[in-house]
Image (cartoon, rainbow, N blue to C red; front, side, top):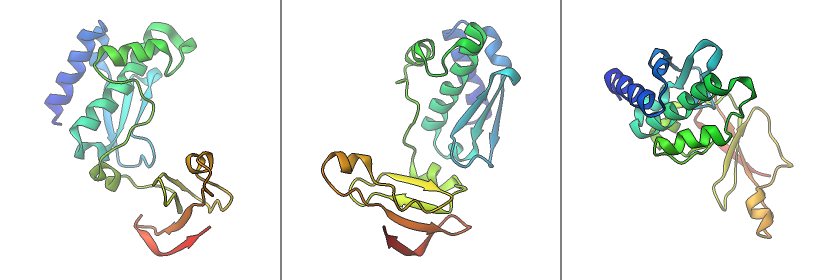
Length: 171
């Protein structure tokens, strides 16, 4: 998504949500974001987006809308507003998006994200993943445990360049 397209999307949301000052919000990309796709800083009128999102225009648009909705909610309701409460959800629906807190991203975006974690915990049955700084041998996959399975996770040590190491161990 080019800068012009990004600016046009912000103008569109500004009109849709009747929030003219939204066009003054600062948008910046960060290569340092490791786990978040975007963050809103209402007090600074700033939205920071994970630079990896540039590889996926659809995800970029959704994350931008998500974060801009946080700015609007804070302007209208102050600190007492719930970050993902009913007002925020309404704005997301008005924008034509499902109000979700987490989203799946494309492989291109994932490959651009650089986790701080040292270990990847992955369920071999349902492929749920979670990265952490330390090995968590006692963790189990909640989905699989509820289904009556052991829920044991495969733990893989991540190298500094973020590619999984060859030594995978079963926990």
